[in-house]
Image 1 (cartoon, rainbow, N blue to C red):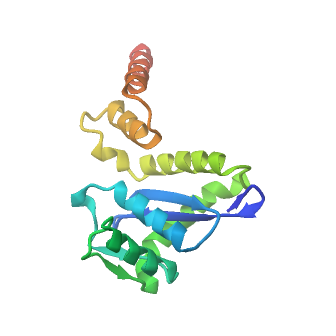
Image 2: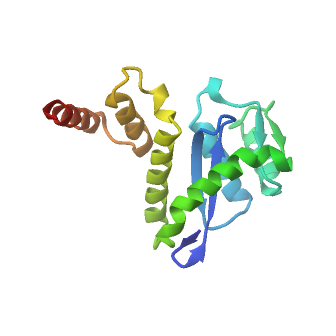
Length: 173
């Protein structure tokens, strides 16, 4: 994708069910960017959510970045890395659907606006893929609001105000 007139790379991590774990936008596709992305994706997961296997495309930067993360203790040492062409199909098919949403935008002016817009696109796709169901224990809008708070880093007071406003509007209708 184009950011500020130059190409940038969108790294994305999905679990085996196709649910989005995290994404990272980088102007380069080197070992430092791959290491930053993998570390960011691992930080966002709980211990029980960590996968024993990571599937990537054939880029050589992933193997070196994963080895560095293991050496630094930021990734479990028993994590296996597989670079098999067809095992990455879940990521590629989901990435294509995201690109269909991004294509009409025709590029972004800054990395900050690109990140914010992609974050919003990913949030809407998470709702479509029913990823909010894990937070929706009460089966109402509070679960979806909790997911928005988690992704966008809003304070709990904003969540409370949004849920109250939503309930008032739904109650009036």
